[in-house]
Length: 595
View 1 (cartoon, helix red, strand yellow):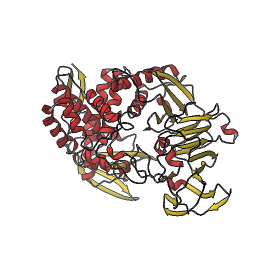
View 2 (cartoon, helix red, strand yellow; view 1 turned 90 degrees about the vertical axis):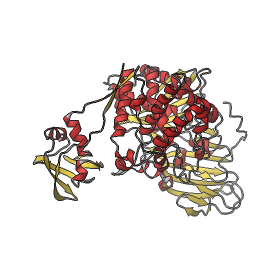
View 3 (cartoon, helix red, strand yellow; view 1 turned 135 degrees about the vertical axis):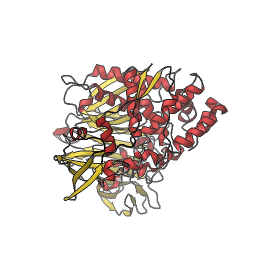
View 4 (cartoon, helix red, strand yellow; view 1 turned 180 degrees about the horizontal axis):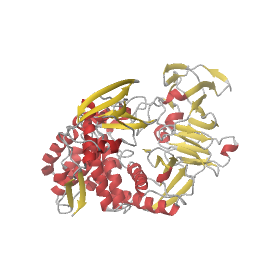
């Protein structure tokens, strides 16, 4: 196999060997060989977070054992000095050294590492110690197959550059540097593989967890259309993709949803019933959600992995990397993920408009939108959005949800200003040319000059107000004013009595062993006025027992201005409160349709 011309060493100075050693105990063994350790005392660092998921995760907590040895004298132990929770220092040594670690791996998310008798998955950030000062040199990765009958038919799925591997994919891989290594997740086990080409580029989806055979033809047709549409968006003339191959790694489970982007692959988590399988009924809306997830993470191959905030160049994996631009990188991606489903004819216009209306109404139901700006939401992602608690709906606005509405609003404003001659697509292509192909990161105010170049000074007043009110301010986006009435009709939907009562009550809940347990109490709602709090178990309202299954029926039986006697338990102590059912102001409920 041809190697990257940038990689010229016959034997990389850094080599990781990874064994799925203990499938029952969920432990990987990892050997790090350093050919030329820092003679002053080499420092080793375990990543604290993984790019794309903005939370300090302290991956070092899963290291069970760590030891260092001299390669000159096998098994001659070398003392390791613990500097920090995630840092170690070797003593002054000459010649190669090896560091052996045992790492526990039982996180089934897309962000970490997992190992059992059915499958293995890992991101290098969870298993591979970083050799400080040598992050930018080539490194090798050797994958060793498990020595157990459970894994007899396992193979490897990854887009990391292979050099010498067997038919199952185990063997020698090469990365240009640490950043390249951590950007290629690796899955092992048995897969159902779907293959197709989009704009001449090879794509595949490797699926684990489905009980029945997947519908290869349908998946291939749908994904081909979505991927082709996205490539054409950024490169409408050449239709070139920034990669030679792309891989979707899918773990299908009973309950779960999420994805993590990488430069030419993505790791996805979804429910089994979201994937079309033979001899199994498929809920179309659930499948559309899965396609939307695929579309979202695929879009990130351009926006985030190549078009990046300047603050992420380079990533500092030992600390938080703050930017106020996640409304652009995640919010705009969230706008385009559904738009690309429509453009690729995976959903019709009616469905697409319904999705927009649902997102719009959901944001309007979030009290936090009045307190936190999109810029602050982006900056505070590390401590607020990714560490959600019972007060999150009251204090945080989603840079995904409102960011997507912001992208829609800017798209509508550009189309209105240019009388349809330009759109947000033109801005995305300009960003790609200026910052994606060049990998020149976007400064925090970097969109200003791009918008000026694209639309001229006449748009600057609109953009300035847009930033002040909707990005750095907390104003609601007046989308109803920006939709072109010749094409899209915006109506305020009349709420049913039950919908009005539920909104007025202002709670979110879960069913816990027959009790209705409050998870969130929203600002301005009846529940908060009555003194209810997250964690409370509602027992009855006006003498009627409350359960999750009876909640809607009970609320529907109430009348306006009625006094409610609410009985609930907090810390196993009974409480009773009285509150009137008043509806002072009902939030708007929008619906969209074609003219």
